[in-house]
Amino acid sequence: MMHLLAFLSLSIMAITNGQTNTDSRYFMDDDNDAGLTALPIDVCFNSNGAPPTRYTRYTCNAAGTQVTKTKYSDPDCTTQEGGSQLFSSSPPCGLYSFNCNNAQNEYVEVGAYFNFIGNDNTCQNLQSSIPSVLGCFCNNATSSYNSACSSNTVGEIRVYDNNGGCSGTASSIEDLSQCTLVDDSVINVYSKIAGCVTSSTSSGQDKKNVIMDKAEQMRRLRR
Image 1 (cartoon, helix red, strand yellow):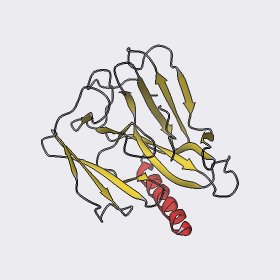
Image 2: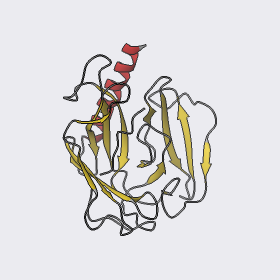
Image 3: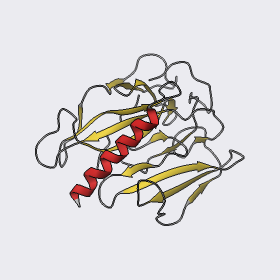
Image 4: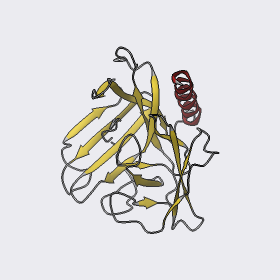
């Protein structure tokens, strides 16, 4: 329903695969409302906001060589839906690439805001959010994006359409501190930062809990 995520900026990172630079663990997937993006490991998130609502969590094995993807029907990721998928080899770039050995688990929450009647052009009604891992990630051989946040209200996405990774001039920049219309196909859906989880933001997990609680309350009201 919503390709709300463009793609975001952070500098000084540790090099992993190809043109990917990040200090965090991640799994690249497009099976969510945001499309292809780097998603954090061991985080339960709302991957599909439209009914039936689904949640996803990625986990690594002890050796750091495999990722398991599991879907759930509840926001705590306790009630599994269907079987799990196992990924045992990482391509150098793009879909299904992953890293289980980095030390951090940092990401920005990109929120989807909308009303069923009328506009939410001030981003007051958070309906769902997608966690996007901080850093530079290559989508393919010629396109990369860089994601960053410095607080729960400040973040950005930079997209690069070249083969130089996240260097040079960005082809587009999205300021996540602003409430931006990203989808008007059915109803007007707006995007804005909903949280920032980094090693320097100690309140990050508390903020994430608030995000999930509010989004779940909104879904219950719609049932």
